Image 1 (tube, rainbow, N blue to C red):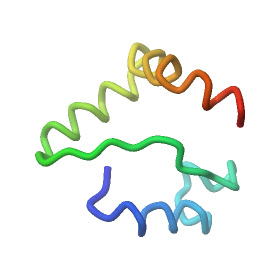
Image 2: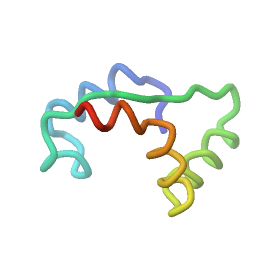
Image 3: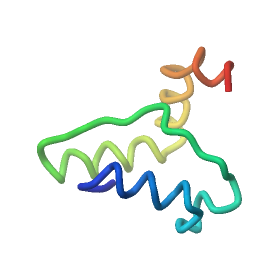
Image 4: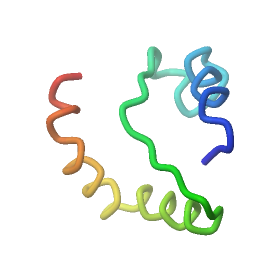
Length: 67
């Protein structure tokens, strides 16, 4: 979650994030925007759960096949 998507993506691409450092290069294929921080936090928690990961894979099925 971030308030500045461009900055956050640049940090990931430069290897400044320990979570993506060993997975370079990275490419943004999906994002969601929320007006409320609590809604964004709730969605992030869901997407990091097993059910959320399954949902995300199903939503991006064809995109992920081409990567």
